Length: 411
Ligand code: ASP
Ligand code: MG
Image (cartoon, rainbow, N blue to C red; front, side, top):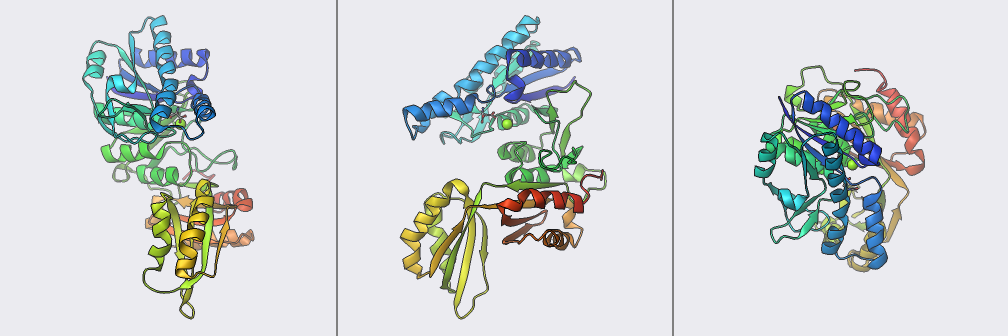
């Protein structure tokens, strides 16, 4: 007997029929003797609908009240799933985040989980009851309803698994696992049987949308055994992708596990600034104060005491960043010009094997040059290499790299 936390995403509960399918899957696991905690998202599209509704009433919705509105989506699906289970004669009880008591900080719309009370869930499980919990939400110390950021139900699932020391956390979604890259761009993309937690963390932060990044952080911190599977396949048909810990991985790892890409960034260059101490701070200090996150940063070697300074920000914050620089920075540091390009993208190769294999970067750069793609920025870490290129070459770059590194072949 195992204690399993299963999380079902919005498409998996997208209609009454699908909710009944989820109940059928839960029933199968029960007959195998497992204890189950089930976390659900809102019906797909519902959170977007609620957000749009809120904005129609208040263009910049009050964060506390926005959370009150957004949290309703998941409340609907927990009730419906319990009904479907009860209808099959299965004991089930639903709980919203506050009822479980998923305690979070007070950062509305992006709250972090601090503590989870398990007593109620444990008592239900001991009585043979399926516990159904609303994803994406919690409650702060003052009793305010909070939400965990878009995609936050993944984090609820992993956090519950950590709190209950579950044997496995299964994330059911509309894809049957983690792929070498997005199959919509590269049809030859291959499902990975396993991927290390660190690779998954990089992929999530570099633009792969399979798991919310916080859920992966959580899984790493609490060593939760995490698996991504499809809810549209029959059980046993697919094993999905297991997120492993590098030390436990017995098999020889592939050098590259995947290629991630992200069109959400924009590049900004501050031209000809004096090359002296404090310049990076003079530029990025005001950007940080304006709460704009910076991703890649490049400063050129100085020539004649002057240098250029480039960085990337989220595309949504591009205009805001330009405004900050033009108003607060340009004159102050006597930059000759501020230029920007919102039509860029970032393509990244990820793999723990990079630690022990030389020459990955040069092979990547050669592949891009053979396609005539200009690299605008480069950044590396131990297990990833990212390049910024013109957005219009994104698909070409991803396809060429996928082929050059033979990611379509089993490792
Ligand atoms: N319903 C929320 C969203 O759409 C949370 C989730 O689905 O994970 O972001
Ligand atoms: Mg999701």
